[in-house]
Image (tube, rainbow over all chains, first blue to last red):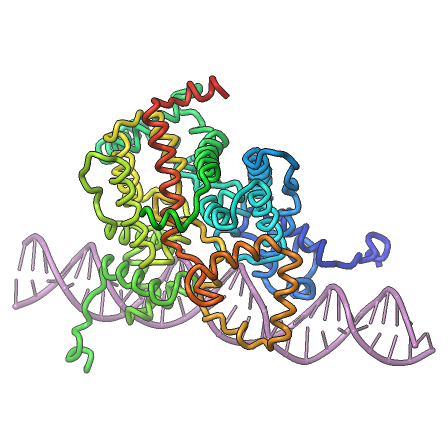
Length: 241
Length: 241
DNA sequence: TGCCGAGGTGTACGGCGTACACCTTCTAGG
DNA sequence: CCTAGAAGGTGTACGCCGTACACCTCGGCA
């Protein structure tokens, strides 16, 4: 009876399900996102969801399609490199808002309309920018997942709890572990240290992911521009090799 | 009683468990690999495995460590680029033998001894090749998961069944789908076609993954060599930008 | 007014990882 | 050689998971 008063039992629809799923994944991560948990969030019994999505896999695909709409459309511009760069950085900012998406994109084999549409407009930037079909094809492979604005992060944290365990260890143990590290993996240590004291404290938050990403991206884009300018073709490349 | 005759119930140990797990994953893939399935393979009750691995996550990490040992050690040589290239291509051939490993590497945050060891020797190649610590750090980020010899494959198949469903559709439907594709995703179609008729039939097996991988790798390595030669530092780069 | 189909429910099944208590078998020390 | 204790294998059980299937409810249209 209070049901009638309070909320009239508003009906679910696909869009609400997807939005709730994205929000929930943003909140609790992708692994704990179960059909049951999502249903609970929507105040509904688990099986109700199946009236709106075929199954969990389709849900995940659809969630990706939802966030793809958040990526800025390609800006108009004479310089393909600038347009590509902006688009990728826009995708990156979206993916940073929805961290779970990286995993989903990597894990699954998505050929959803959203993904195809994104790729299509992406390819279009190259074709419009004076790239041959041949070169565009290879370039798309070269860019690969960077199209989505992420790279496999190298040294990053377990991405959940706040590194508590390390704090808990006594100083002597920490020293010993450091020694162990220094003798067994001297190079890793050197690199890790380098990134650490760039900024402030002895152990800063690591390195600037954004810088690293753009570094790699520009390296790639510059190489690509060179190929375009010199009229690279795979046939010629094969002949040389 | 026949147990005594047949096999004397040889005991399990960690190595056997790991080897069986790798073999099983090679065989059936990573998703269907469960503790129960693995136990069955070893003719043992599921809980028996927990006397040799802490839990499933640790098992997966350990499996990665096992296959890392299959990667060739870095060859000696004066040319860092050649050494890196060979190492990565060796890693690639290992990862191709164990396709599941890509997924595991992408999904998890591995800081196992094997992974650290591999990274350490990898970093060592750059340092020995005349790279500053600073540049090496950024270069490692730029290479990212390519270190393992894989890139996100762009157009690849669902990776299981042999594209049966398409065959099953009647010609009219196929035509319609093609039309749909052509109008909605013209650029994707163009690129897909380009890769298709490179070789033999109208629809070849797609593109040469190995070529695509080496194309992207060389693009990157060439860019990296240029930075090394001109004494790039992040401080200078920041000043310019 | 009555019906019908879209949408929500309840129950159930088989699979998963793994905690915990138990039993068996191997091995080292008296 | 005997025995204690550790190392390794077993059985049961719990709480998750995705989802098949039969059912009920209700809003909108004929």
